[in-house]
Length: 465
Image 1 (cartoon, one colour):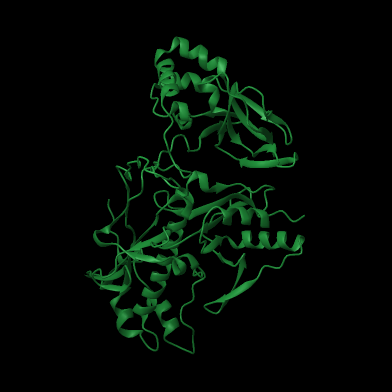
Image 2 (cartoon, helix red, strand yellow):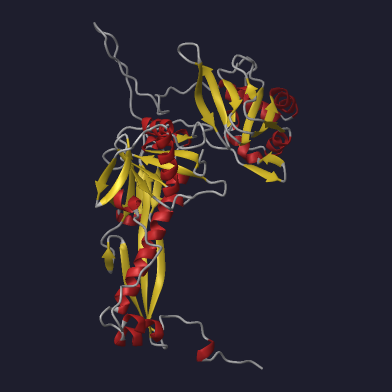
């Protein structure tokens, strides 16, 4: 025997009269909302009008090979590389023989290194490819006066020694030393050559890669432009042209939507001294804007953290966000406009400054005192995630179209717009006398050139010593 859902069994779809009366009696505040934050990213990004819903970023042609990170899978204490991820190694880019890649992945030997142990010494032959599954490795070289110098820091997903795949004469140009406990997968050159003898596809691919002429590029990996300067007489002037990317990236506007429902009885009777529909709409818009900022930071397609170029990702030298790391982050780009960091990361940076007796200056922006480093504001953003290991990221960026920086994308002038690129559309009244409004926000972000955005990754925020 079926039972029809009576009015008492239906899920509530709009604000009830009992809650509505809280705004209709006594002296009261407007409805408060703890989720509301300062949203500095939305306030400081320059917003570009996008007609047609799509923004295309045309760039000069660049050659980038094997600049991605390698992904691993972990089962208990065992770590394995995903076979297709070996394509991130320059010599294996474009190699699609799944059986050969699987065999290479199976031949990777898991090794554990304690902090301070050397993976490879400078000057030794490069006979092993190291895939860094977890931990931090420092590249140590000789400074200008013969002392030891840290040339770079590698972290999860990085690789080193890829020359072993194609050359038996290469030597390590720097010492690789574990800065923390590290889990590494090692693939020896002898294993690669052994497999290449049996798998003709792999042997042919590596042989063809070794014959590829080196692409002429500038310091940024862009196709070179031939120029002549400082000449005398009548030399032949070189001919050139500026090549563009054949398939430039396009950013489509993303959308965040919800349907706001207000009972007509509430809208009619409980509007003094505060309009119920306006208050419901105000808080809904605040929630949409919070989601918008979260997407600009974390979205896999256009978010800042996921789309930062791998060459612009740095690792802290000692885990904590030190002044030295912030200087390194600043030095990677011109015209830095601001940092963006989780409040806990800002506090951790403040502790490091205190240890050194440094007092960062602060400036007043819109009535708020904002800390700075080297004159660049550090804005708080709680949308930047903090991991279970108490690590987070610090973002630094240049902004604006004219500066080839990071820009926000929106489309103003849409129907029923109440704010730029945000609309509220009346959807009608149903048979339960509930009024519906469709609330929509359109937005995205674009990084015009790779060095417009840099990220200091794996920053520890819970170290107090």
